[in-house]
Amino acid sequence: MSKSPKSKSSKDPSPEQNKLWGGRFTEPTDAFVEAFTASVQFDQRMYREDIEGSRAHAKMLTKIGVLSDADCQALLKGLDQIEEEITDGKFEWSIALEDVHMNIEARLTEIVGDAGKRLHTGRSRNDQVATDIRLYLREQIGFAISEIRRLQTGLLDLAEREASTIMPGFTHLQVAQPVTFGHHLLAWFENMQRDASRFKDCARRMNVLPLGAAALAGTTYPIDRYFTAEQLKFDDVCRNSLDAVSDRDFAIEFCADA
Image (cartoon, rainbow, N blue to C red; front, side, top):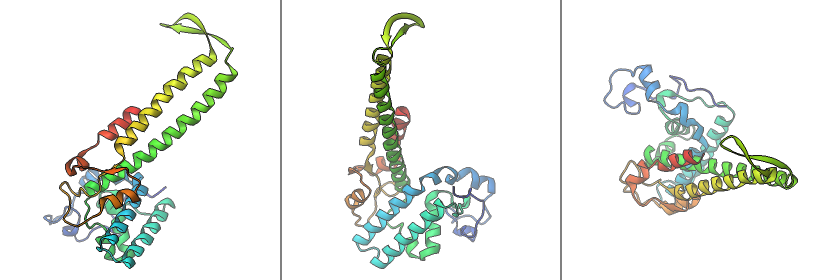
């Protein structure tokens, strides 16, 4: 487990004017406001996905000439180090840095220098978090389907053994007709078959890359979205930048399926 977010740390933006969203501020932000507006307490669970997306983005920026090969290798090595720190519980999360993206970027800049800042070229936290959520839920869908299949296998084995075991069937909590226990178990098998199918449908609609939409209207950098999509195993790229950064219906669909 990584450490709980702290209000202040050595990597917090300073002075106050240099903080994220702090360009017009002259007084320190109240700690309560920082805690209220921060999301790092929740989105730090997506650190693997955030790092995975940054690896792909670094390779894409190198491909189009924004980053040098040396910078790319330094970034990839730094991201590996950060992932290890988080996994080992040695990473210090900061509420002042708001979210998983800025915490990782700040630490990466500490490790590799200015190349850590250049990694954000051609992207925004808006399309970055949209990508993270899709990657995270895609992984969760894979896990859910795997668990469903494992349970179905157990149901089939038990249903075969209990194929002749008689039990009462109920309607309206009243004994109605005799059925076999095996038949009853196979009803649950069919139910779960539909659950797995719904998860697959959700994954199909979800598996499009929003990265490249930037804040909401794209970027003037000649990014290669299809290269990034291939790196991250997305089937396609989002066709509309506004939809890419605002769409969360796939998350609602996942919750409904779960």
